[in-house]
Image (cartoon, rainbow, N blue to C red; front, side, top):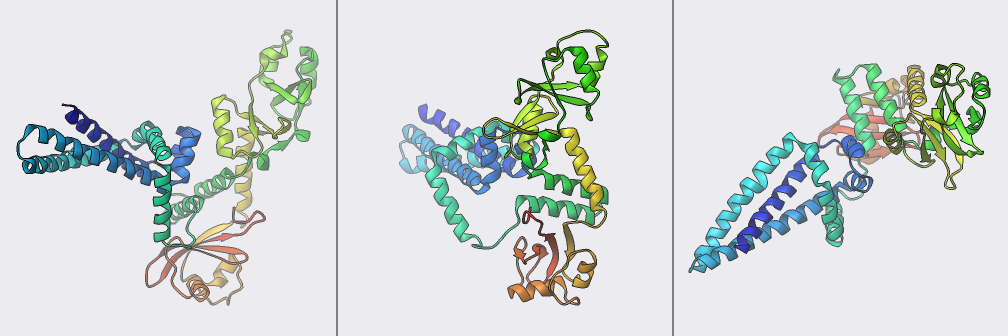
Length: 396
């Protein structure tokens, strides 16, 4: 009986690993970035080949366990070892095919988010336990795959999808520009977009309410940063509307304080927004490694920053563009994408001359000023290319 129970447990785990594989492939990385714990999120997003290797290891371990368990079960029930082995093999194949593959994968396609969220910790545990094997298999796979070829980064894949959406009229120009600019800001650090402390209006918490109201009139913002003792000891933020709603009533300023998030200067904006969301605040104080306040970030001002940059970009300061392979450089020059190439050359001719071959989809060719990402190509021609300008921070 113990072998039959072990067989059923193994089938359940085979089903889990099979379902997770489909769910993981179907789940958006943006969902993982928001809904999963930090370590698991970094594992799933940053190391997809290791995730799938760990999933494969789990599937194989429990498939073998199921086969061995059912064989032992039938061996105890039947006199003929050959018949027992045949029956076990046939039964295991049928069970794994139906209950370990077909049904779980069909369910996972309909509810990928649920499966990913529920079983990601299990995959992470399998990965940690089998780390040496996973690492070895991943390295071998990487060597076998196209070694040394540059490929699209996750950010460039998103940029390419947005531009294709614009080209196919799924997005209008303003929507595409907003998404591209939002994506550009998303990989910046908190220190890149903060308002320095010297530009922030702040008041001490121990001021009498009447004095606080009088000083608050000088604030250029509708929120006032409040400190206790020194500027490195920020205790919260006061909204002007809450202050004026009191009228002339005397009440402690501490009773009006709203929480602020404290974020490190090197945190990415995704993590900053997550911290603000956790505390239900739209205001964050950027601190250094010693806890000293460097500046502030608010979700409202970030939105203004993006919209302002979007308006600036309408004046021709676009940093990337999707073009056909037969686009001539004289056309690119008029769009602000200059290159040291004859004006009558096409983008395809330039890339072929530089590489000596037709690059595959996703390959990257870099010059001093531009990066060319092959968006679409076959063995005969380069069809579409994503061209990106280099800025002061490189290719960000």
